[in-house]
Length: 228
Image 1 (cartoon, one colour):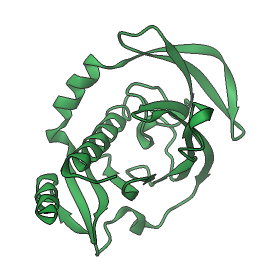
Image 2 (cartoon, rainbow, N blue to C red; image 1 turned 45 degrees about the horizontal axis):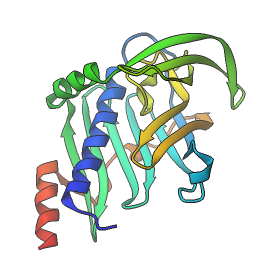
Image 3 (tube, one colour; image 1 turned 180 degrees about the vertical axis):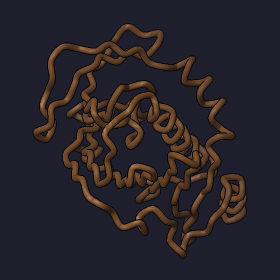
C-alpha cells in the first residue's frame, strides 16, 4: 500500500479524536488513581477475517497525568501517542521514510470542532444488571447504541477506574475492559489481558532525541516534498 499525505492526515485526525475524547470523559467523577500498565488484545470480531488480520496488542503506560499509548499498524509500524491530561497537549510519534517525527498538538484549539461532531454522532448508554470477569476483575456491563441506530452492543468496564487512559467511547462511566471499534476493515474487539499497578520510569513519557518536533502542517509539507 502506498502511503500518501492524505493517509497521514487520516491517521493524525483519528489520533486527535481519540485523544480529545478520552480527555473529555476523564473528569466527570472521582476515580481511583492508577499508575502502571494496561495491555489489550485486539482482534477481528468476525472470525473469518482473523487469518487476514492477525491479533495484535495495544499497550498503555500512565502515571495518572500523562498517558503513552503504543499501537502496531500495518502501514506505519508502531504508532505512539503521548498525551498530557492536564496541559491538554499531545504528541504523535510516527516515522516517514528514514525520518522520525514528533507531531505536536494543542488540543484546546481542536476541541470545539470535535465536541460538535461528538454531539451529532454520539452514543446512548444503558447500564445492565450483573457483572462479568475480566482477568479476575469484576467488570460492570453496559449497552451502547450509536445515535440514530437501533442495534446496541455490550461493553464491559471497571467503574472504580477512570476512562481517561483508554481510547473508547465518550461518556462511559469507567475504564473500558472489553469494547468494540468499527474500522474500514471490520469491527475490532479490544479486551484487557493485563493490568499492573507500578511506578514507571518517567523517560517513557518524553520524546526521544532522534524525533524531529513539528506541527502537523510542517509534517505534511515535508512528506509532500519527499514525494516529489
